[in-house]
Picture 1: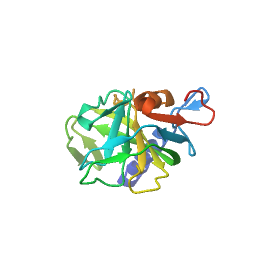
Picture 2: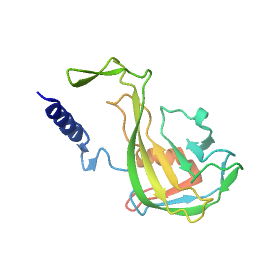
Picture 3: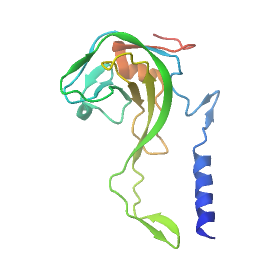
Picture 4: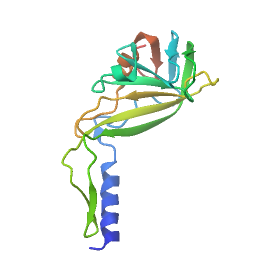
Length: 186
């Protein structure tokens, strides 16, 4: 088999693996919210100086180091870090677009080598992954967050799942009301 045939086969398998898996009437990779959903921030959130994010988990504000990566969490992402601390003021944000991204963490960087035209790795560590749902918000001012990012828990690749609406609401707590058409709950 030549290198182009192997590359084509690997790309085809990769595309097949990216197809959504249906579970009942809901696709496995469905997002917890849809375009047009509303997020109402009901109390100010403080973004520390030099940072562009404020993290929420279990309804509490955390620094990145305080987040339990093995539980769902969310963060508001600003346009850029600021040398001064700033407040995200209470407002209603609309979701303009949604992306699902996979984040992975490996314990060691594997050495990848090509042998007879096939890429191989010397690492048996599959690492852990998490799926992030990134929601572009209708930020009206530079002091508003540009994105809300909600992450499912890091887990082995076979067990990782995107965050669900109930998990998102739990991560944001009473600080953010999530309004999704057709869902029950606040």
